Length: 112
Image (tube, rainbow, N blue to C red; front, side, top):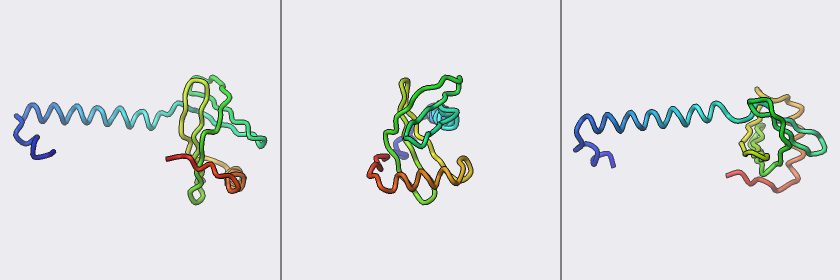
């Protein structure tokens, strides 16, 4: 595709570059500012999420994947869904260990 864009006038190429950069910044901002502030888990399997506005919602675990010491979750609640990445620097090591052990016996690795 790149050779097709070389025939464009400079202002068209510049405009396309600025549009792509703006789109990239919006996507990065959305990635960095996720909808969740807190995800809580009780040992009986009940998930609760607190969004950035402080509203509490019961959540459902849609899928998970254990990758090394990380636990990747996909949580769904009434107004949305979000992936949650739990690793050593944002979760307590004992909680991660308990989740890894709990998920070891289940075949629920449904994350893409």
